[in-house]
Length: 373
Image (cartoon, rainbow, N blue to C red; front, side):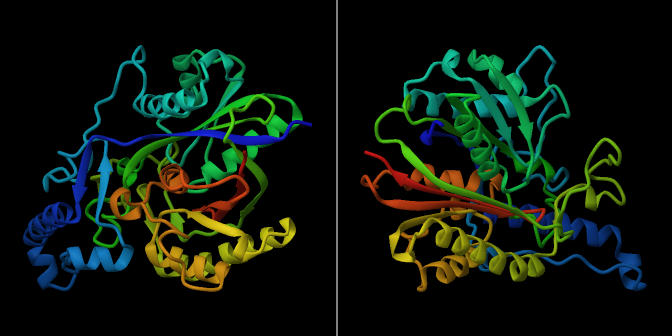
């Protein structure tokens, strides 16, 4: 049985960044226009007036300061309040596949891999551009890979679920090299007119190469163990789909975009994820002092702070639990991979860490790794 390792990662960052101040300006302008248009209903008590947002509110609620997006102009236009991403003809590579390929090529270059050496491609993400053909198959074709490819969606936990799936393929002998990509255009499903969530998401793409140890380059990451968990909850939800489509600007369309009960999510997910990490550490014989770093899902600074503290037994330093949330915002499945990609270069052989994601479902996944010689 082959031992799976992580041999390389890749990252695509969109060219546009939106600050909290820019988001607040657009939302507050939209809010003033909406309140003016509905002044009579508000005065009669039939509607509640919309509230302004603020930079201070956003940073206190989330820890986010800015986010990258694939399209900026529509998001900050009070008359549009959503990204304008034109549809492409079928003959042109799709937007989701394009950014996935960008991240994939960086990972492939780091590992010295060509497309023909990749046996399988998994596209693991929250928001798929279409039902079929799979974006993974499109990525497979774009990089010249053979073998097989498929899409999978476990919301914000898609990357860790994808890593375990790829590792299982390697263990079973179905593949020697698996490319797992996480293209996330989260701005496309975010309600930029909702004060409580308009600031949460950003866009990005990440890639991870999972390979058999005997073909991987030196300095890879041994996968010590993985664990996955799901538990149904309505507290994070997106009802958009071919059975219940709606114009995002139309009446009754709010639940066709991202919605969540943030306080309930915080209260229920923090203990679930903390216990899951601790249980897997016990199974693997890993003590808190053995962990050099926790690369946690980048959704909320407060959640990460509390989870890390429960696992480590003390308040984590930035070195122990690094943050990319402040500049990338919540990038769904890609968040923990961005943290790993940017904050793992200082590891020496034998040092250990954990990649952990959690989100809608509820879903959660852990991947414990050790730097190899």
